[in-house]
Amino acid sequence: MPIVTGGNKISSGAQIVDGVIGTNDLADDAVTLAKLEHGTQGDILIYDTGGAPARLATGTAGKVLTAGGAGANPTWETPSSGSKLFLSAAEVTMTDGNAGSGAGVEHTAWSTSIPANTLGTNNGIRIKGYINNLGVQGANPAFEIRVKYGGTTIATLSTTLADDEFGSVSGYWEAHILADGATNAQKGFGHGLFTTGGSEVDSSATVRFSKIAIVGSGSAAVDSTAIQTLAIAVIGTNNIASDAVLEGVIVEKIT
Image 1: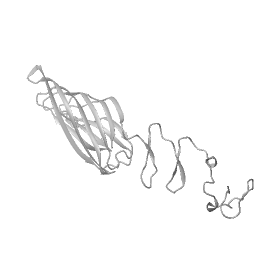
Image 2: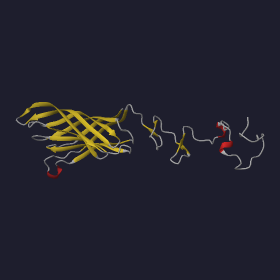
Image 3: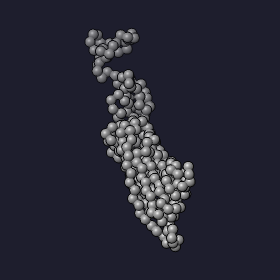
Image 4: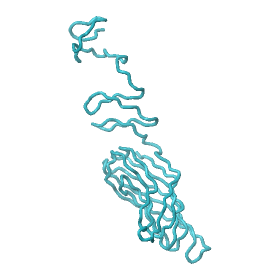
């Protein structure tokens, strides 16, 4: 098999002057794998922004190769299905909603980083959790759970309990953040079901339980092509007096 096409063939063992053979002279399929430079196992050959060959380092175990679109390198990302994160418990100290400057203070209970390009233009993330031992101490106790993406509150779940509710609040809540047709447009919504228990104002011997459903929705214009922080904040707006425990948070990607 000739080493070059056109002109004279070069016999085995002959010496070639640098620069004599050009791209058009090299025969198709003449370069074997053995002639390629050695690399690291798992690396992938790509072309960079200038069109030059480049290596993409192998990703960590469990990651998948994801295209970034025209003009962008592929990246290793977490698979789109399954839970991203579990959190066993996170305690946040609440402030009495009637305590002057303490009223309406936002307390970040938990946060995590959402990888770039997770939402894209039509994906979403679902956040589920349980809040426990949120203490109340007077008439009309009220609180909010705020879901924040990239620093923007995208869903606010709020409720005011009955006048005669004392004791503590526990319950399950869930929120969704969805791409709204673009990488810089999102919408969010959430709901929760909470149980309150304790003594009524007029009868300390009576235990009262109520189930309160709360809903909230909103929107954001966050650049989801960059890594963004997802945070859950709790705020006591009236007669919230004790610590709350945010338990069992799960974050999943929706496609």
